[in-house]
Length: 323
Image (tube, rainbow, N blue to C red):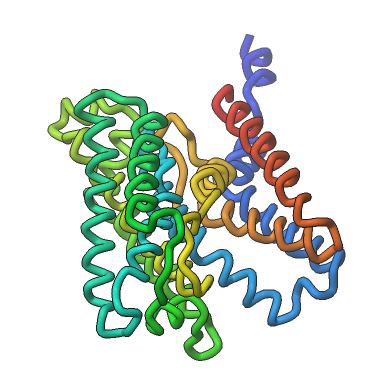
């Protein structure tokens, strides 16, 4: 009898290797992807191309950080792209000088807090599904933008935001430094603070969290506000990178950020995953899109590749959930 049980019981080495692959597999894949991309195109590892990828990665990474918080509590945020575009419109709504920067930051802060509160209150107090709640917020913001700009936005981005989008400090893009600061601050908040533990607790079992005195509604609302604030910051940086105002700045970031998070190991049911994993997923997306262009494939191939990645991420998520 004991021999039968021991045969069915997986070896410790196999269990450890499976656990390590589950935890660090995304980072191993990222390293392999960089190596393969360098072989496919010598241009890939050139300094100018690396810097270009980092500049593209920074706003997506900032948005992914906020999306990670929302997904960890069992939600998702489809309004991030609309928040980014609204922040970009606000950036050109003043006189276009650095003197207007405090007003721009203030107006963006208010807009982001309102968007995050609307998302959080709809999900928690009105029991609206995160998909519909955040989609509705995105539509509301889009309507406000188009009503203000009359469909043809105009204005100049202050020089400060050009620095945020395209400037560098010691050879490192400013937007990348912003991402690094956000990653450290919110990574520490998530892993080493009481609030971070409550995020995982609410995502894992909201009822158990309520029984020990944690308010799931409050935690979820704060996570949606964090997501909106980071999306607004990314929108300001992206407006400086683009250099012109556009009603569609950040378009597609809502899906890219969710796909990146799922690829990075976050469970859409909540309670499982990490911030570094989500950022690794975002890096993989940027690298794949970059190498598609470097090897001479048309821009339209990015759409096909994105679809394949979404299918693959969905398949991986279902496999992890079944396990």
